[in-house]
Every structure is written in C-alpha cells, then in structure tokens.
Length: 311
Length: 256
Ligand SMILES: Cc1cc2nc3c(=O)[nH]c(=O)nc-3n(C[C@H](O)[C@H](O)[C@H](O)COP(=O)(O)OP(=O)(O)OC[C@H]3O[C@@H](n4cnc5c(N)ncnc54)[C@H](O)[C@@H]3O)c2cc1C
Ligand SMILES: Cc1cc2nc3c(=O)[nH]c(=O)nc-3n(C[C@H](O)[C@H](O)[C@H](O)COP(=O)(O)O)c2cc1C
Ligand code: FES
Image (cartoon, rainbow over all chains, first blue to last red; front, side):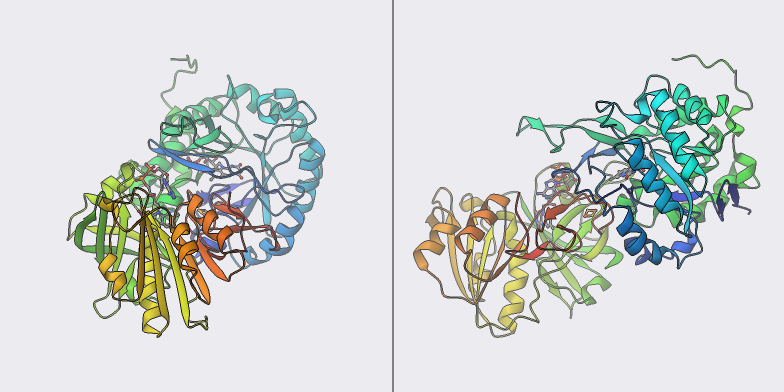
C-alpha cells in the first residue's frame, strides 16, 4: 500500500515520525532499529546556547500519560550542528529541527543556523516558550507574538517552517490563523497541556518545577479536537500528535485532518512503537476502506456540519 | 542492551513487602555488570506509560536466568508483584553502566547498601568474590522485617547489619558502623536512598569509590533528558543516570 506523503520540505515514505523531545537526536533509538524505516524524525529542541534545564524530578507518571518538565535541556544550536547532525546525515529520512528560544532574536539565530545544515528539511517552531522580554508571556498564547516570531523565522529559514501550537489557549484557531498570516508553511500540534501532580506523603508538587506538560493517551481527544477544528479553517498541512500509541490512533488523526502523525510518549513505553505502527498501518487503512494514506487525510470531515459548537 | 520478553520462573516474598523474582531469557547471556538495571513494562494497554527501572541482583549464565529484588511501593511494583511464574515480562536490558568489576585492581572492597539499594550489591559481591577480592558488606534497613539476603552475603565475606530501630544488628545507620569499624579497603561501592548516599560519600570523601543513584526516568535509554545529574567536571556539565550511570565515581556527580 502507498504510505507516502509529501509535505512542504518533507518527502516522507510514511506518515510516522517521532515527536520532538521523545527521541533525543536519534542515536539511542538507532541502536534499537533502522531509522530509515521512519517517515521523518523530529529532534530535541535547540536553543541559542546550551541549557541545563530544570531540577529533577522532571517526569511523573499520570493516568494514561505523563508529566514532564525537562526545561528544554540541550547542548545549544552550535553543538547540535557540529556534533549531532552529522550522525543523522547517514539516514535517508528527513530531519525536522525543533527550534526554541526566549526572545525573537534567539529563535531567529537558531533557525538561521540550523536550517543551513543539509540534513534539516524543515523547522518545527516551538512557540510554547515564555518570552523573557515580554514579561514571560508565552509566544504561543498571544496571537500577535506568535505571528511576529513566525514571520521573523520565515525570513531567515532556508527550509519550510511548521509552527508547533500550544493547546494551552482558549481558542487554538486564533493562533493558527495568526501564524498562517505570519507565513507558516504548516502546523504541528499539539504540544503538552500544562498539569500538576501532588505527592501525598510529601504534601508538595512531585515535579521540582511544580508544573509540567501532560502527554500520552490521556491528551489524545484534546489533540484530535484541535486538529479537526484547525482543518476546518485552513488548508495548511498539519502534523498531528498527542497520545498516539497505535495505527488506529494514526488513522484517527488522518481523519481529523493531519497529513503526518508524530509519536512521543509512547516511545518510552514501547521503544519499537514507531516501526510497529508503520507495519500495522496498511492493514488498519484497508480495514477501514482506504487504499493509501493520502486517501484518508481529512476524511473525518465529509459528513461534518461546518458549525462546530463547543460541547 | 536488548529487548526481550523474559519468562518469570519464580516469585517469592523474601522480606516485608519485598519480592524476589527470577526470569529466564537470552538476556542472561549478555555481558551484565553489577549495577546495571532492567527497564520493565508493567500492566497492560495505557495503564503505565513509563517503565520501571529495577536493578539486576543476580545472573546465572548456566541456567540463563536473571534475578531482581524489588520493594512494593506504588501501583507499578504492586502490579509487577502479581505476575505469576510462566508469565512473560517485557524488559529492556541490561541498561546503563555498572560497576567496572573487571577493570578494578584491588584486594578489599567495602560495600554499603541501604534498603532497596542492597540488591545490586549482592550481584557485585558475587562477582568480586569470584575474583578473589575480600568483600565487606555493610547493610542498613529500617527494621528486622525488612532484612533480606543476610545469609547469602555472609557466605561471600564479612557482613555488618544496622537497623534504624535496633530490631536486628546494631541500632543506627550504616555510617555508624563505618565509623566504629574503621575498615581498611581499596574501593567502596554504595547504593541506597539519596540521604544515605550523601552521608556515605561525605564520610568516605577521602577514599576512592563508586555510588549508584536513582532518579525518575522516562525513556531509560538516554533520549529524553529526564534523569540528569550535575557533573561539574564533565564537558557537558551533566550526566544521564540511565545511560552514563546509574553507577558513577563518587566524586564525578553532585547529589541533589
Ligand atoms: C537505576 C535504578 C535501579 C533501581 N533498582 C531498584 C531495585 O533493585 N529494587 C527496587 O525495589 N527498586 C529499585 N529502584 C526504584 C524503583 O524504580 C521504584 O521503586 C519503582 O519505579 C516504583 O514504582 P511504583 O509504580 O511502584 O511507584 P510509584 O511511586 O507509583 O511510581 C510512580 C512513578 O515514579 C517512578 N519512581 C518512583 N520511585 C522511584 C525511585 N525511587 N526511583 C526511580 N523512579 C521512581 C516510577 O518508576 C514511576 O514512573 C531503582 C531505581 C533506579 C532508577
Ligand atoms: C519528555 C518530553 C520532552 C518533550 N520535549 C519537547 C521539545 O523539546 N520540544 C517540543 O516542541 N515538544 C516537546 N515535547 C512534546 C512532544 O513533542 C509532543 O508534542 C507531546 O508530548 C504530545 O505527544 P505524545 O502524547 O505522543 O507524547 C516533549 C514531550 C515529552 C514527553
Ligand atoms: S530516562 Fe530518558 S534520558 Fe534518562
């Protein structure tokens, strides 16, 4: 069966890619299986200089999910370009660079440097970071800031820019519209939902950072709803994610309107989950009457009433 | 590291809330060092998205078995304890870096373990004993009910026991025994709760040794940055416990 999908900058053998932050820079999983099997790979967020991240504990398990507060730990864009990207050049799989920052200048610097490297075929602009200059308001929750940082990064990037949307907003379509106006080539969603777990014996939040990002199967319905809503208002390609663990989940995202589907947390539970999903996908597609991946994209809207009301 | 469904061949409660479980599998043929761990999937479906790291407490290459000892703490370990002989368990292992038993030249090793930090030291004691190294084990538990493997350790060398309430061995902490006995040794090896690790590595600050540390993990293979510990003298300034550890030279990392 034809699993190919072609998105701006990304010529993918299949629609499956590991999500940023759940796959490092590929090395560890390359010891377990052939990365050429993957449709694409999203690498860990890069910032202007090295970041140590938050204090530990940084992760907690929750019902059908987990919280994380890694704090964007990474060696900085220069080290990533020098030490991590050469390894990925050995694979016939497009690499997506996740770009983060605390100021527009930092985003621009990282995007300029990393998009010059030949293995990088697209940027995923992580706008879920607080803007230090604007008093810590997240780029991803303010439409004006989101549009501004998208436009600034678009100007310097050598490759298409997918903006990764935060679900922690009242109306995600407002942000989607803003980044589309800013020139985004595509959208990627969802990032984690903020959450907290309190340790009963310790009587305090379990994560050292107190607040973390919720991911895993628990967030999937939220992600599906957001992909669906956004598909109704724009034709930009969408990389969907949030709680995917099976090929059935992938089909659900395709129906909602995603053209490619990323897998994050599930890699921790089952390190071989991505190749397994890819293997199962043809059977699941044909079971539900589809002859290719392209065939299924957006098909969840055919009977849709265009007025979505909030439940 | 390999991925394998290990078959449970025995399960036994060996102390209060403490289970010893033995698996059969090809993994036992890997070159497993004491201090390395298994990253175990527990439960079914989406119940537990994170695996549980549990140290390897024994390996029998002839029988192709691996033994672990774990304490019932929360949902994960309680679910694990319900698995029956004959059941299969999804395991990644051996994970991380263990104690470099083959590289160390020494005559006398001091092992200091607290509670659930004791199991990896049993496998270490066995390996050291096989090499003809003199082993002194100092074990600390909360009380008599928690104590396990006392006889097993005694068959490999000197054994000292401390309990918080004095219900077995001496009343007090492992550090009290180390103070009192003033052992002579070449290297120390310690594993246990962070408080104990800090006390022991402060007390033995002038000695050479290794510590094994615990942290909440995500991937368990070095990809997610969940489990870092500051390592000021290293190039990056940190180490990943799951991949670079859980065993470190005592002066290599800074305990939180
Ligand atoms: C390298 C390493 C080796 C270990 N070896 C052993 C061993 O040999 N025997 C043993 O009994 N225990 C060992 N532990 C601790 C063991 O991993 C935890 O007791 C266990 O994960 C608790 O799971 P739970 O679901 O019962 O508890 P819960 O508290 O319900 O677990 C919730 C989450 O927190 C994590 N967690 C809770 N406590 C710890 C902890 N102390 N360390 C790391 N993660 C934790 C769990 O993995 C899970 O993701 C080891 C930990 C590490 C890091
Ligand atoms: C441990 C961890 C680290 C993450 N790091 C990043 C990151 O660096 N950049 C980013 O855009 N998203 C990051 N994410 C979010 C994921 O890429 C993904 O959007 C989210 O987890 C939802 O997908 P999932 O439910 O399949 O995990 C991280 C998620 C986890 C669990
Ligand atoms: S648990 Fe993922 S890096 Fe250690």
